[in-house]
Amino acid sequence: MELTNLQEVDTELAILSRLRHKHIIRLLGSCVTLSKDKRLQATTLKKKKGLLRRWRMEPKEPESPEVLKRHIVYEYMENGTLFDHLHSVDGSSDMSPVTSSWKIRINVLLGVSRAMEHLHCHANPPIIHRDTKSANILLDANWVPRVSDFGLSVAWDTASDESAMQVYQIVGTHGYMAPEYVMHGLITPAIDVYSLGVMMLEVLTGKNAYSEEVTFADLAIVPCHLDMRPVPEPTPWQLQALKRVAWTARCCVKLDAKDRMAISEVAANLEKAHELICRDEPGSVDELDLFDELPDSPRASSVSSEGYRSDLEPEVLEEGR
Image (cartoon, rainbow, N blue to C red; front, side, top):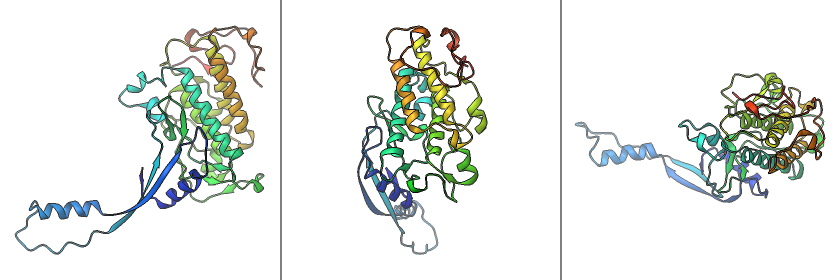
């Protein structure tokens, strides 16, 4: 990858050089090159070939300024970005293994949550990614996700965990940014949790996070209408898994950062969703004895796959549209 924003490159190199995790992109190397301005070079070349002849004498061409460029080499990700598989403009996303499989979608979300848990809880110092989105999730040949693009990331001062850091330059991607960050420039690990919650809703619904006209408050209360592309219809076990993901997402996009789920809880809930969706045989809710019922959620007697609807938690997961 060729980059010209030297500050972001320095941040990327400083962070990735000390991170090792299955779900974080692996840095292979970097280099710096000096090159001439390509536009001036092209103009000069055309003149030398007589393509821009003039009857009058042309002034001498200025020396082409040298441009400093940095190149970062990452491990190769054969299957591109999660965003491209969810939102391809040419319709090819409809045939993608990602969009046709709820299991792959949940596997991707689980991998991202594990990477975020590593950044927040195990990196020293902890790292706040600050730009978690589907376009920054890369997929390898086996559809295993890697979190990438750490150019906007910041180190978190654990000594000040009761108060947020404040920045005066708001950078990130519209639709994924937490409200306290957008409005006040406040940074805590909770802003990554918010972004991950938005991405969970994006994966469940198949909708573009920054093209939908929804407010921050809407994300926490709007029913989740499932993407209709995966076939066949989800089994009862799959619906249980998707219901858990939807409930977790709702807990991640709370308006108040203090009300959001901690990243470790997010990963734990996605682990449970993964276990559910991996079950071969569908079962009734009464047989679901491995997991406690969700807080603040009414427990129903059955789950129906008709119309992609879960009766277990209708306010969170509703009929796909």
